[in-house]
Structure formats: structure tokens, C-alpha cells
Length: 400
Image (cartoon, rainbow, N blue to C red; front, side, top):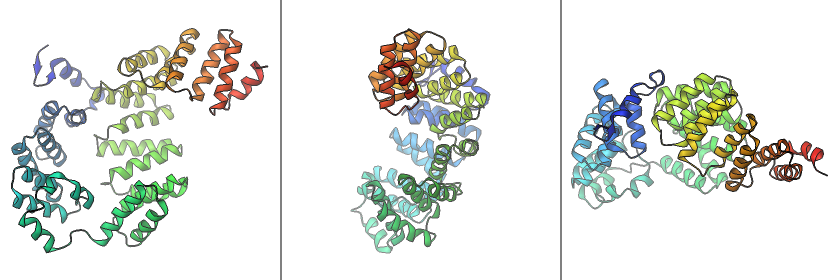
């Protein structure tokens, strides 16, 4: 097949007919970056920039693709263009590029722009970066830190709170965050950290309250994602779905949330919308099993078992180490009265995860259909052992 760069003509034709035009050149470029396929990423990002010259996100990520290829001249060009719009955002990468090009004075100049902006990198990131370390003996570096301390006490308190959170030292972290919250310092980030602590401590109500405030900052995508996760946990599926759609409009490269949107749509019986999101993920990542599993779940929920089997078999071509794949295929076989095949798949799932109570229960049901009551009794007892309480009724009925 004829190839254009690293892109096959067949692949391009597939992308040209994406579902409802959901997949943009920018999304394709970002997806290829996730897969470290930088030639392919640049092909699509170049197309995206032809359509929207000067777009800040497009320039940033094309610059990153060039940087990963060690094409520093072209990376420099993109970040300099970005600097005209968002100097602070471009500053850190410009500093890294100039460091690699052995220009410490320019590197420090651009780093200063980053340190004076809302895009300022955390101090620990700065100290651990090898490119920044390479300029740390220069006179320009010394002059930068003699000019002022670029990290405030509040900056360091937030970093200390993050450190405590990483080690699950939640009371210490929360004390620091409460002080920062009273000072209204980086409110969205502080609120999001507090929400995560409350969630870890099992206080979902307070976690939701803090996360809702954090998610109001449209620039804090991480806070928006966490709030969606909490809403989903609280079974507030409609609001979670609405916020997920908004997130994906603002940040179309938040790729895991296409699968979240698909699941949330399915929870509400909005299967067509769910399938659109699952298919979008599949187009972006055809080599990952998760998109096919999502699609299979949606078909199964609609009792379209043959369609579900088709999707799950594709997932199994890509991944054989996930028990949930064999569990779902077994349930499809059971629903179509292929109980021997179902039992076999449940056994394969249990080989991968012997503590899956649902799988033990489903295997017990399959054994009943095949008149293997001793086997079913064993399975139901295992199901109950691993937390599937519905098995109690079946134990009373089928076990002596």
C-alpha cells in the first residue's frame, strides 16, 4: 500500500470518514503523540495549523513533537510563535531548547518569563529537570536568583502539601491547604487537593463540595476531570455526562474521557451517543482494547449480543490479559444460550482474577443450565466469599 510519510493511505481513508466528523486533525495528531509516533503526529498537526494558523495549543504540541524528535530549530520556531501569544507558557520549553543548544543566557531569559507567569513550573520540576540543571552554573542563572526568590512561601506550602499527599499524610497536607485556602491562593488547585483528601478519607459529600468549586476554573482541566469522576461515583450520571461533554469540547485530547462519556451515556440509555464516543476512541486508538470493550458493553446493554461479541473478539485480538474481557464474552455466550462456551470464558477470566465474585456467580448460573449442580454450588460459595451477595439465595437453593 502506498505510504505518505508514516501514514498509510488506507489509514487516511479511514480517518476521512470518521463518525459524525468528531475526529479532527488536531485530535489525530495528539493521539499519535500519545503513541510516540511523532512523524504521524506532525502530519496531522501541520494540517490542523493550516486550518487554524497560530492556534496556541496546536503550536505548543507541534513544538513538543519536534522537541521529542530532537529537531530543535523547528521546535524553537513554534515556541517563539507561541511566545507572542503566551510568553509564560512557551518560556519553560524555550529554556530547555536553548539549554540543549548551549545558549545559557537565552535559556535563563526565557525561564524568567515562565517564572513570572501563571504557567510557572513547580520548583521541584525545575530542580529535577536535566536541561535546567545544565545551565545552573552559568552567570545568568546566578543573576536570575539574585534578582529575587521566584517561589513564594505560599508556593512552597502548596508543594509541601503535595508532598504530604503523595505519602498519604493527609492531616498535615490538609492543615497547609486550609491556610492557603483562607488566603485564596491558587484556589482551584487548593480546592482540588482538598477534594482528593476528603475523597481518600471517605467523605464524598465534602469532596464534591470542594471539587465543584475547583472545577469552576475552566483552565484547570484536572479539577474538571476529578469532579466528573466524583459525580459518576455519586451516580449523578446526567450532570457528569454534561460536564464530560463540556470538557471534551474544551480539551479534545482528554482521551480517557471519551470512554467515560461513553459509559455515562450508556448509564442513561443514550446508547447512540455512547457508541459515538466509543467509536471516536477506537478511531484515535485502534490498537487499544479499551474502545472495543466500551462498545461491547453498550451493545450488551441493548441486548445486541452478536454485535457485542464482535466487538469483544476484536478487543481480545489486542489484549488477552484482562479478566473483564472474558467475563463479558462469557455473559454474551450465556445470553445466547451457549453455556459451555460461557463457562469456558468464565474459567479463563477466573484464571486471571480468581477473586472476581461476579464471575464466580455467572459461572454458577452457566453450570445450572448444564445441570452441573455440584459445580454450580461450588461457584456460588466462591461468589459469596468474594462479595457477591446475590449468591446467598442460590446457595440456599442448590447446595445441601
